[in-house]
Image: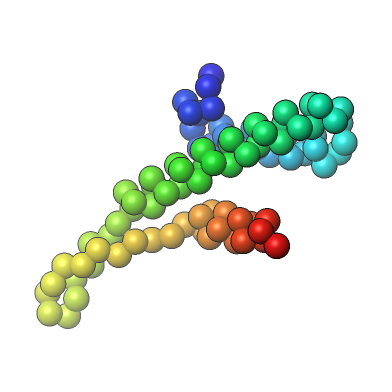
Length: 90
């Protein structure tokens, strides 16, 4: 199954497996580089899927005047991903 066809949950599980192997030092240098590249691809897929979900999860809220406004809800996972991205930059 290509990365683009994976569900968010499948991508996260594979990403966790890659991270575990890298942390345990179970891979050669070449395998580690390939795993890291795959991990980046999976992370990007997860970010895309989270952004798509965020766009879909808009809640209609009526104000006191009866006007309808849209409110976006950020998931806990999206906040963690954004935090991780900031940490990776420093």
